[in-house]
Length: 186
Image (cartoon, rainbow, N blue to C red; front, side, top):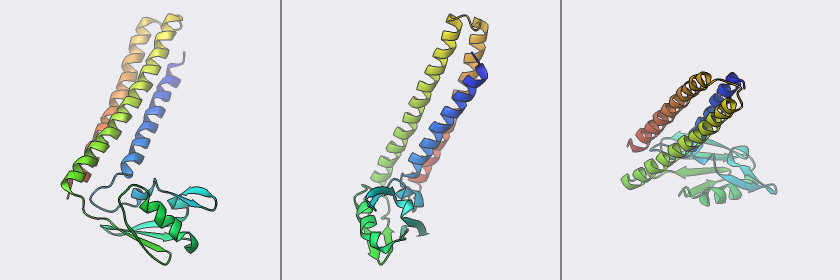
């Protein structure tokens, strides 16, 4: 068993988990307009579903306004419908190839709901990391059973891996706290 490859696998997988968490957080609305709010919107154009950013440019000219500039004006209606049907609660207004989205201010109740959702995303990331840890610790235990490493090595490897997971868990907590602060700030 090669411990270094096991440790790099742990670092790589936990880093991927954090990147996914960041993407999920980017889709959560805070008090100001974010171009990442529309990242999950898929538009049915050219006989297939494409991400919005592949058919239009999204910008935030003001704190509470998003502007979507559709590259091919014939797709504007499809983009508008995709945004309306996305479940984000946005009401697009089209003028030519430009779609404006006025983001209403978040109510206190909606902010609390979004904090719960962000907490759920953070918890899912931690669960994913626990599953990764459990899998890797199992590999270490199997190596001891197969007499590939000693019990002293097992303890040392497990403690070292645990530090990696604790560090990543603290990153998740920091990201969640930051997102909560962003959501609750008026």
